[in-house]
Each structure stands twice: as structure tokens, then as C-alpha cells.
Image (tube, rainbow, N blue to C red):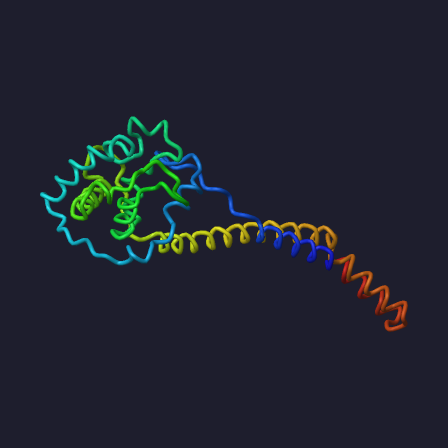
Length: 240
């Protein structure tokens, strides 16, 4: 029994310390999902922290943003924001599926990315810094239009609900899912190990109950604890 318990403990320890399986690639994103997630979870610089969108998201702003997007963004990110523009196949890393990722990023983070582009670590992409070609109001117009794309209101793209957050918040949101996955893995392994222990121990003690009782009775008789007639009577009772 002691050896079996030790084996079970080592088995569970190795399972708990195992590395989680890698995520599958997402449609329209990089083939390396981890790389895309790292880029979208980069910290927000202090100078971009917390600005509220000063441009009202009305029809006029959305239309201006649509025109800017069509001229400056669609070639890479695609008409519907799924990273499938005509220039995308020649770019590494691939353009983000902004119709999906925009819903998980705050206005401040989107304004930062549009303003600074991606020509530096950890992004290292071909996206230019639009702060040199677009005014602040124009950049906010684009962000208002991206919200329409991420809501699935343009074309036949997938509609995905969810909170809007910056990169740091997105990182924290991944933690509970990793913990839940680890607990489920440990739970399944524990169930398997306990089943093995039960089978092993059951095999050791398998046999007729009366055989064990008879052995105990014989030992008591050998020690002189039972008289001859008591021993015979009790042995007969066990057989019945």
C-alpha cells in the first residue's frame, strides 16, 4: 500500500508541473498564436494611458473612419477586418484580425497602436505610425469604425461579444482559464490513479471472506484460546 501511494503522489506531481498545451492558431491571425497574443498584451505606454475617446461615435465619425480605413488599413487588415487584405500574404507577422481583436482592447490601447504603428518590439510589423499622417480626431474616427467592425455590423464577419480591455487586463483574464485547465488535468489524473490503487489493493485482498475468518479462528485455537468443541462449533458456523 505504501509503495502504491508513493507512486500516485509522484504521478500527480509530474502532471501538475506539466506545461499547458499550446493554443491552436486563430483564423486570420499569425500561425503562431502565442506570438500574436504577446503582441496584443504588450504594456500600454504612460503617455497613452487612460485617454477617453473625445470623438462621439455617431454616423458622421463612423463614415469618416470607414473612408480612412479603406484608404490606409484595408490593404493589410482586409475590408471586413479579418487580416486577409491583398497585401497580408506577404507580411510577417501577419496583420491582426482587427474585427476580432478590437473588442478585447481598450480605446486607449487602440489609439496607441494606430498612432505608433508596429515597427518596434514586440510588434516588429510593417504597420506605419499614423500619428504622422492622421490627426488625433481622424485616428479616433478610425477607432469608432473599428468598434463597428468588431461588433459584426459590417459584412458577414463573425460576431463576438466581450469586454474591451487593454493588454495588461487581457493577460490577467487568461490566468483563471489556465488555473481551471490545470485543476481539471490534475482531477482527471487523480481519478485514474485512485482507480489503479483500488484495483491493485482489491486484487491483493481478493478471496472468500470466510477464508480469512477461518485463518483467524485457527490461530486462536492454536494459541489455546478456544476449546475443541468451541473451535468445531465456530468452524461449522463459518461454513454455513
